Image (cartoon, one colour):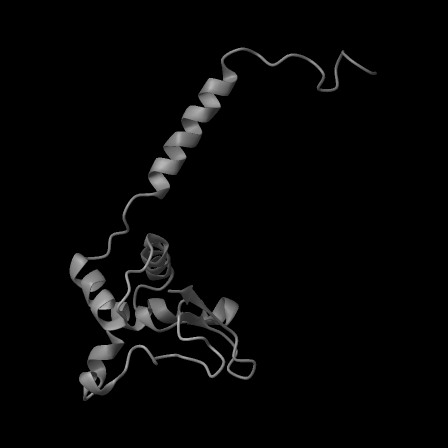
Length: 137
């Protein structure tokens, strides 16, 4: 039928749109909350890498911690073949295991040959293809 009767052509009930938009606002507020990562770790990442990372970086770390609390950086390796690297090494404490932490240049840490200087690798995949993802500073 054209114009009315049964297949979505009717009027909307009053008041439903207001309820939906309120729910949308609540969802947006909950997404913008700060991840439960200590300010000391955040400052350490910022001091080593000379950049402040977005909140989704820390939320993703907490998600990976839920998947594998002992090794969050490797929590995606079995299912997706991905490893968290770079600034995630700071959160995992891997930088403290080096004998000379001052000798490591964090700006070159996990830099690939064709990466521009403003690119910061945070996830690596297949070493053969050199698949990696990151942030542009």
